[in-house]
Image (cartoon, rainbow, N blue to C red; front, top):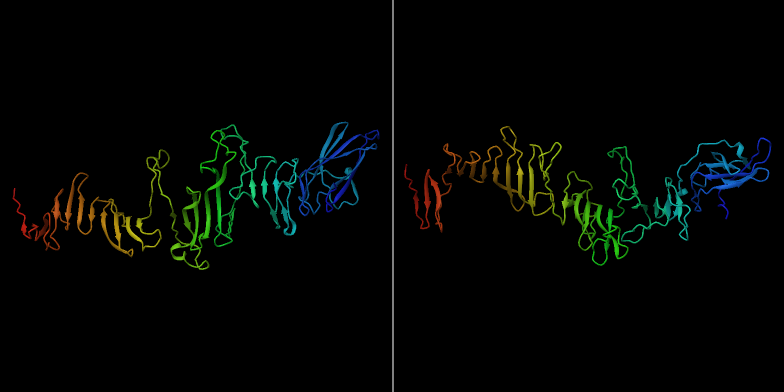
Length: 506
């Protein structure tokens, strides 16, 4: 079978004799330094050695594809030349054969060059289409069968074009086919093949992991420099997600791994997504705008449920707007969980600068702001839904442990502050219950309690009661009301009698 008609070939000739003028017997072998591809056909020529046998005059003639043929890639590869006489290799060197060589060229006139081992560039010209499947670094001697699989070293679509894939990188023909996920097919995509051929990472194995390495040297704060991967949401309801699949038994939804080999079971499984992470704009049901990055985890039915989300719109303000009216970008965002607890695994820190501490949930900030935990009837970021707030206050720390006190505040149905029924002073440890009950700590073991007064008369470990703001006017039931009137202790009894409490002097 002949080469494609658009391949330019050059006839290379030569003749070998010894010092006595006798013709030599032997061969001259030409081997391309790399696979070459004609993307317009398409066809791939693999670097199989081409052998020219010397005739009785010691001469040969062979047609070689030009190394700078504009219709093939790469452009500017080399041939390795091996000269053998009497079964022995005399010398080896590399040459290039330009396509504009007139007529034929004598090998003796071609100057040796450095070998070029650059990867093949599969370059569909003028935005053409390569029909897959394509395999990079595959086994070029494998039986291609009816699948018409093309083997190349690299693909370059710099000037446009399309691979009607899939494109498989670093695969070996005949190896176990990789899983394709719930869709059952990869119509377009890039497969980076991995295997267990390298064994365990226990010091005895080798690396057989397929990976994509991306390198960056630039910051991403100017014109998108530093972006290694870009995801474009081409429809309002589209999702762009990174998915993680595991084998799941079809009969019982349990993990589909062999307990002995740790490989996927050979039958009765399906590959199911268990984790998604990515972003989307419009909700699946088209009822609102979500506008967030999220982490989704499979539930017991296999459905993926959002568990953690970070919005890039103000969902409370813009979530119900038309698709073209929501403002993109927020100065402050509201990170939310869904169908999830948020637990902190408390761990003792045993080394480093924080040794002796325990890992914790921390709300931090300077003395110019409150440090708060809100208990609300909605997860929205606004204030209307707040009902209780626990806070460390923004009161100035002036020394002697003063400032940054603790409060529990309560709010009305509109989210407006009612009062702070509980205040604890950091410097004294005193607990104040609004509007007038104060539990004062004189020391770690002695406490005074005052009600409606701040004067303890110099006492320690005493109970102080101020004059009643309003004396009881109705009769209590089941007991008495104790209060102070004009500095004297009185009781209101169930029969309506008010009487002073007589105290015996000692």
